[in-house]
Length: 271
Length: 311
Image (cartoon, rainbow over all chains, first blue to last red):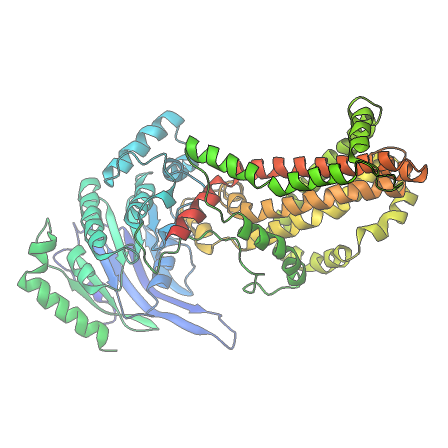
């Protein structure tokens, strides 16, 4: 399957221009040096507006490298990433990123309010509207009156909610998430999965989420992009025909869920 | 707080010398890291909270002074009948202290010293942070400049004194220059080391949030390096006080150091002791003020560390 994304799928959105378009992406480290290493060999896929796409792959498959290329933090060696039609130069303004390690992505010297205010200050939002907006997004991620607290005074799950709130603050079109729930306990992980589904449907936002957790990918996604081991290629793009809204108990016990899970397991562990 | 192995909430200070950044500047950085580690160990105490706790803290601090008070009392009692030229009774020293430094003319020496120190220390602090930040920002230039800096750094400032006196005379500018030249290093090198130690993910976050380079330095890099910058400033403070006195001992007609030397030369041993006591008091007050400022500036850091230690 050289260009699997070309095959139309029932869940790939409305058929308009894709929000994110990845073409023959290749990324090598230390190019021209003896320790040159190919992390991503050839990755091609599209993400339609409003779609939820998960990227899975065996550990060491270059998932984080891929996400850094998609966000514009890292320039690909060859190939192209287009966001809303334009080739990526820097991190696009209408794109937000949530990292796995909230303890590092949140600034411990700033209160929750000030952390969430960072992108709003950059965007030049006036103080009054900033305060309203902060209260709004903190509410949207299910956080009550924690604005005056410091991140380190909150639990891990709450800290990641703050990071998500900050990513949503300036109303992006797309959210890129790098293993966002890998550092929290199982119960919190379920809560955060449901939170991101709710946020996505409330705000009609496009989400690309990288994870090593196959169950999580099936539970969340409209489509799952399966990567091979390093250097990564797209192994298969699997549509997820599960209904919405999804429910941790019901969805996870459906027959389709089990089949998809099994299929993805086979793809990921085959290498 | 949920314990999770993948999520250390550890701010980036107290590291050992940056083994991850091999460069020409490493010996300097290694030399400068020691005080910050000492600092990290010191500030590991849990912060106070609530009025009761504050009172308890005050009481335990007062209680800690028992030994100091005992020594003073012993000194007072044992020296009461002293006829030794070199160890006059503490009562006489205390009387002289009041007459000379509070009621008398030595006040001008005190102000002169403090003025030179304040100007010199401020310049050293501001320049130290600025140069450290520039060396961090422009790494290529930093690598080129580092050997030169290291070369200057290893010269004991005392050895430069004759040259500086020859060039600048014995006025205020000489004293301030000496303080700056000696006190700038810990702040500069700790700033450089602290900024190098900023988590790469914090800088990625700044890019993802589209922060300008200036905003990144102001809101991410400077606060992130602040624990180490403060450790450097504290070390600079001690060096600044030392060089203030040294500059007055070598070539001066005013200042606490000059007062001590001059008293010794005319065998006014009691007055000489008062000068030394004034220095001790000045040093203590400066350190105390510094700690007070540090508690405010690094409140987040002290709090985060306390949470981390509780697990």
